Length: 402
Image (cartoon, rainbow, N blue to C red; front, side, top):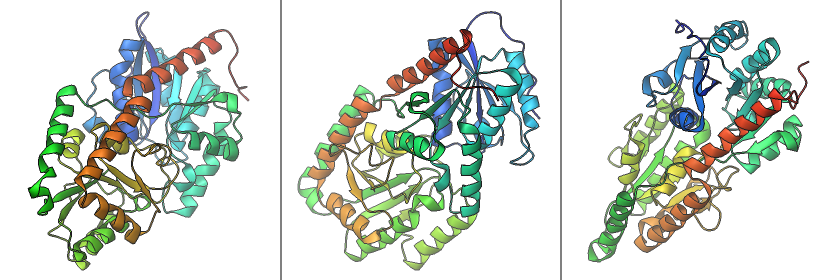
């Protein structure tokens, strides 16, 4: 049941309505969680309407947002917009910020019914969201139908901005690229990492120190986990000493079953860990030597990748849009997607070379700090709010309401 709406405040932070699904707690949801914590420092307050409420409410760390469960009965249940409108009006919301195709459809209704200016945030390409072609096409067509009506479109990468312009024909002037950002590692943590890097570089390292490989996220078929497991089998057969940690939940139960079956067939149970959802991302990153992201497609700008870079972990990832943009200037190793042998060869280079791990980790941290800081990313997004609210106040919204 949705939480009862609160009365609008006469003064104080400006309420911003965020529409998102809420059934998972992954990169998108963590971004909103962090944004909610920072919003009051910038003069805003987030009001979250969850259209598929589940794990996000349970796992959010910020207490600064007002949460409402507003479950949709189906993907086409747009009558939910009336309930969301009641919440928005009661809370005094001045702007609506949507994050998914489902929420964009509801946001468009709110734009028309109560006149809220609307910002839509594109985190990944709808055409590659899953392995279900029909579902992807339906999401793409739905997003295309409404996105040109948004007053502002924010994308997390230049590649996605090009996708939005080409596929949805949204004018360049209405698109703002706000790259994802993560918090820098604390100074004390940096020194601990440096000491850990320095310690194994002698005789013990040459004797075969076990290297921990990590991938982290919400695992779907497009994440390519099967190719990483196959690469692990090749590494084991080549005599390398390592363990592989697959830290995350499987969004698709069938996909999870297929990965476990593959681990068993390759006799890798003694090498592969499956801890499930990890609440303390920083802790699991501290415990790894190499971060791996074997995605096949559909990445916008992965938060887990940026967090590994902030922790100065060397990265091996697929050479695809969204990842390629992050790992420029030698900040990581790129390999062709869906090629287990190429992935295994790149992993073997890092397993056998502590000095290469150290160099890549330092380059990754430098690039994260220069391009993907959390405060700078949030500041740019709050600036989008201010511009959009100013335009709307003076009667010059970017798009007509028809």
